[in-house]
Image 1 (cartoon, rainbow, N blue to C red):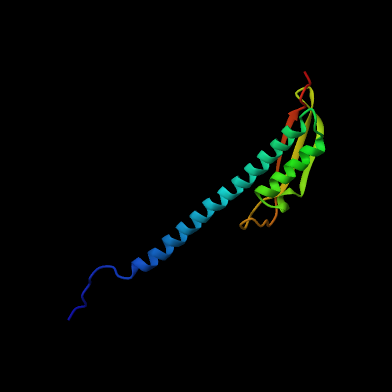
Image 2: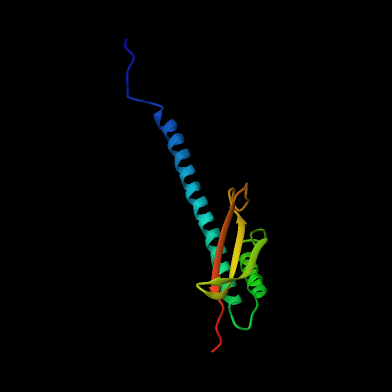
Length: 129
């Protein structure tokens, strides 16, 4: 008696594991890229707000630096607010302020294995009148 052939058997579990692992890795990569973009956006927005606040007529450069640090701490974590600097600079030929934020790149969740994101924002001082 000849063996009966009913078609390919046993392929579905192996294909499920291979395709499932690939889709899981792809989904985690998308989530991670979204996290890095979110962190960069929060840092950039905080630097800009700090520079804008420091450019007001009644505030100082240190006030803008403190605001940027506070916004980063509230939005992300105090780890990301460790390196915030604000300096008086020339912006488009006018005196102004620049806020620079250097923070770790989140590589495993919010933890960093190395590398930095550097963002800056520069705004001219508010002119009286």
